[in-house]
Length: 374
Image (cartoon, rainbow, N blue to C red; front, side, top):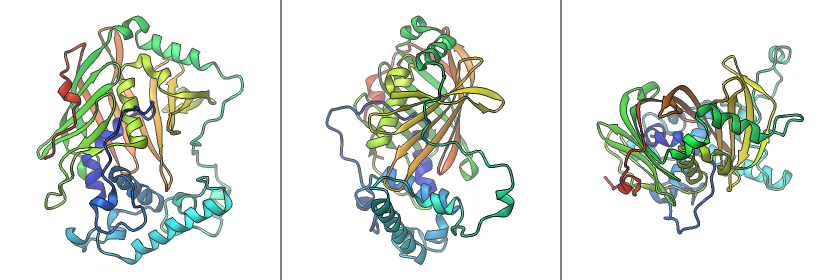
């Protein structure tokens, strides 16, 4: 069920984290304990964050949904039935929270992943083969400022010039894009996709599936997710109001649809050491959102183009990463825009393949409204 619900929300992975939360009154999000019958520990957590938390547990332990919920539970008992591993997970959540509180002043230093590292049992004995082998590259979440690194303004200026220059970017006030969303694994079907964007910060992503539209939208103040939830019988989930890091994500996504706003969307910019991605030398830049989430951008040193973004969402159990790779840049009215996005998050992978982008196309305000309940 976790994978299926997240797939229906999959277009949220298009979101680049950051931005500033609107001060307007936000719709109260649906919480996991109000939707499911048997949530005993993570009460009060928004439903979309709860489902991503399930993905965090899965990634940390190398588990699938069925390892804890059981394949033979039946849909009606999938979340309600208390199995031994679910009870253990509840104890572990409390243990990790107590460790951080007692030994690290409440800072989130220890998570499930700290000990499990993708295995169902923490390792207690050093691996000699790993000890004397080349270390596995694993980038740190927090990027420190590198000495003698180029100024962040210089990197952004090169990027803006590479995609068309500030004058052309200022002339782009809206666009409508069409293409396809391609899933991964059991969700590898290809579905038509549309994107509607309007400056300065409105955006809607719609994936058309045989069971209905999956929608992620932001109207400039508030945002929602909606879509069909299919797991055997239909499971009705109302449009979900977004909050916290998820809301920051779609707000920044809307802002960065118009690339001239990139530098203003985050604060506390710092330039890290250069790195390499697929034989491309890249400049690493990291910023922080108003809510304290991190977003790391990787610019091709030669071309100046943005080729990767890794964004993080803070939660009570750990930091959720999402990686978005950009490629196939094409000219759209003098502005270079990526026509292919590969998105990887804790519970899946999705590829966006655009076929057409219409610049300055009229976009009706209803495209950014709260999706209708199905």
